[in-house]
Length: 251
Length: 342
Image 1 (cartoon, each protein chain N blue to C red):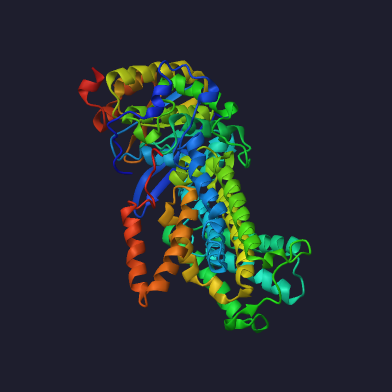
Image 2: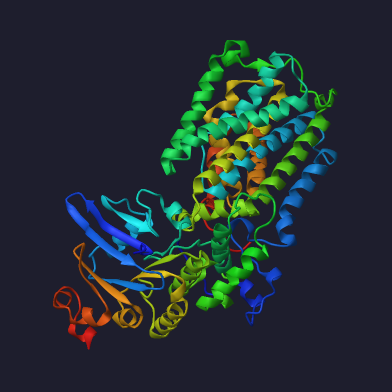
């Protein structure tokens, strides 16, 4: 059997005596959206950090296409194909929206040790960058400094930046936090359009979006994985109901 | 990041009313290249023109030429530091070490009878760059206060080393047998020639650093100053970029040191003192760390202000300190502030 695209085995993180992520194993296939849900403090963001390398693990392993990433720093994992949208949008505030994305294109295409040509007008970076801005619906804000974008626009921009990396795995940490109904609908449509290119691990509290998008759903509670399954089985799962889902969200 | 909300929409937006922008017009503005087109060149051009004509409109005395040459030499070192502070976010307190190493390179070569500039200046540049590279391997693994303290420690190390080498005069310093030659000629003895050599060097360094900051390399450097995690998440480690910037700024300081030794034909450990490092950092902040021109303005203001006050007042330092503080406050604390429109 071939390796899954992303394979977590027994991942563990402790802060002192507190076990934040407890022996979590899960897999993600290419083209799959795997949603990770759970109450606040369940360890979802820490788990994403363990995968991307912003948090050092205390046990277990992360494998991408069979290759062990454990112990590699963030930038090496990114090079190997991990793209991440952080819980709080992480962009370059002084750069324009376009330059944020162009930087991602530059990082992917390499050769950043070039010294004397002004990078601002390089079409090799700007043209694809504009395309990715277009994908997320931000093309008209291309020249606006990122710090002047609204909260929702900053989230869109970060998504464009991560798409420009052309990663193999997308880690999305609450991409819809603070989004309105229209933005959410747009996002679901966008993700449905591009989902075949990546494996997507999605942390999200908006259950409508999760049920609309996810092929599989895993539920994390107090650091432990208590269930994995398709939308129907998660809705029906008694322990999940007890741990997390309110009745109204299931209606 | 405060005061984010701006009531008015940025002017750049109006360039793209229908979203159909030709690729060549796309303009990704940011801190170090917020100004584009002719306006970007206005301030450097004005400064360089003023310095070019200064000797012929009243600043032609030997005293003024020496003073302005010294200011421009310090401006060269400050330019290198400005790239570190404003470009990479690295506020080094050890820049005088590289300046002093450049100056002592001249002295050591002079002691061995080598005074040809075609050899002396490259050695000063390489020595400053090499020292920065080797210490950079260590200091760039730290951040914030630790970074400042370790650059300071390396600076002090070189200071005490220079003070203790007796063949180079130790504490008393070393007087050069002669000024550095330029391809066998003694033109650097001429104050006016030396003045224009300093001016030309400053302009060249300025142009190179400006190009560097706007290149692919500079973009990664500027991005990593603002958000290192994002840069890493894009697959780039800031470390090699910072190391190269640190090395370049060291080489630039080494070159300035080579000129400094020639300005007075004398080298002493004072060139390496931490006070000199602080002075360079202050020049950068005084002129505005968000632009290279700030380093030149800061150097000119500080050197001239010090001279004017010292000449006219006995207890001039009483005034000098508060005056510098006042200028920075009035300027609005450019240090660390984000510049949006220029």
